[in-house]
Image 1 (cartoon, rainbow, N blue to C red):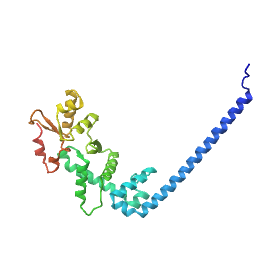
Image 2: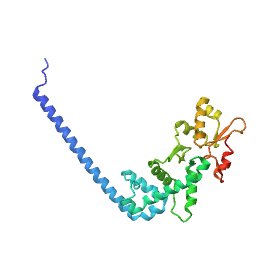
Image 3: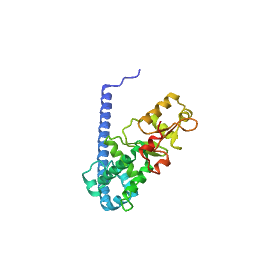
Image 4: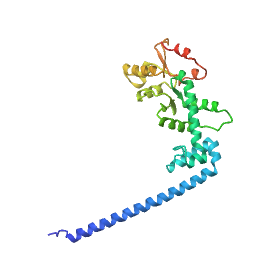
Length: 257
């Protein structure tokens, strides 16, 4: 008959397992210590790099993007606080604060026209125009970072993915996924109809009408009830004819029933 495992053997096995576990814990702690040292070294080098190239970081939008990516690899956010090393050394906190103010000014100036939605491309162009040709260069990446900071403030700012870019929302309107896909469907021509939504998204008429009515209510869409065939719901943020010229509130009212 096979002999059972003795108590001594069981004790030895448990002792060995405990030693392996203890050794594993020690190795894990050593690895954490080494990683922490490496991160501190990297952060020190990053600060040295920032100090040496602060003028390039301030002036060049492309250089600024690369620097932000370097910071992200070690969990450093130069925009996290208005005070401290990064703000004092680079002035990036002030830069994005000023950029955020300019974004708000552009969005407010165009709200009567687009209802609070604007393409990132148009926002970029208007911000650059407002800053003048001698001002510090600004990229779309800079705009995205500034908008994310505005979003944290809870004042209605957000970004809606569309066609490889974004629509910037500057009003606290409740937009869900249904509204987003309708905006994406309207991207090519700047408007959409109930039939196009039914055919393109395979929705029932009631669902399409509900979404469009909400966009009208929030001022994000204009209704052309005189269009041939069926009414067209225009998204001012998406069609170029309105964004290329000034439109008054009176003109906007003429496009609604």
